[in-house]
Image 1 (cartoon, rainbow, N blue to C red):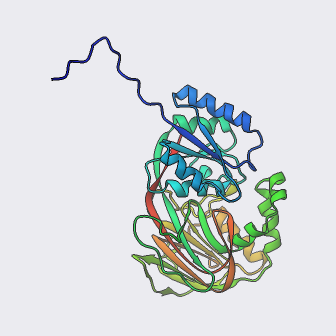
Image 2 (image 1 turned 90 degrees about the vertical axis):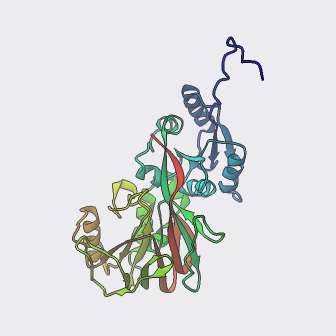
Image 3 (image 1 turned 30 degrees about the vertical axis):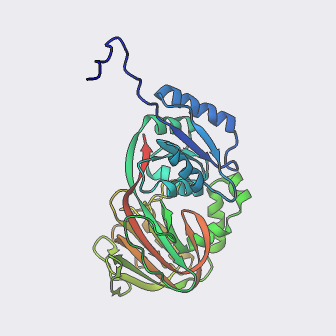
Length: 345
């Protein structure tokens, strides 16, 4: 029998947790200051000193995050814009390694929806190393330039599916993202999107068919204007639209609740189809959104489900978590419930 351990020998100290920060050098103005803030937070909470890895134009965060997971990181924090967050998260889906959120971009939409600090790097760093793990859903997008793709299946992203955390869609939102000047955004912040939207509002809409999917099977069509009592529809919508958005969460900049029923951990995606024609119609629709009118609006359709297909009559600018991806004619979107761990305060 092995000898009894020496009672005078102290037990080995627990392993200190490891943090990797994947940062976008374009978005980080004071790298040394940020390193100091994160180092202080790690020291206070008994974590190892963080490893810092930059993104590049070719490798925007996913590869760096995968390598961090392989190296034994307990948490990989994104420090950059929403595009960096999405890239890092793509590598963490389906793992036990948590995503940390350090505000460095304009939108910080996932952090806002999680009620995490977006104005203070110090507070955000403390939430990463001193907070707790929370599981959330992610959305998966498959897109096509000429048809509606077949919805994906299974409990992991397929090779041609892109992960999104906040929203994806096409129409006005895609045109706004594609038309926003990066230099203006760097100076003004999120109001740069407002300027871009003002330039896009008068553009014509498009014919769209949006259908909830269950187990890969689309539902049947719903006549225009037919809604449930809470303003949502549970069948497909076919109409002339201005924008179609599918969201994993519903809050935008300025606290605007575009999808008030959306939850990050309910296993359901929410969709809106906006179809205003003219300035006055836009004012009416926006008023219904701002006031959270539960009766709905005849130019606003709300839908909920585990997935959606979107087909438009002609190619329309699309976006995923605020990044423009070019013109598309078809989208297949589904939810992957509880597949991402996030550090929250």
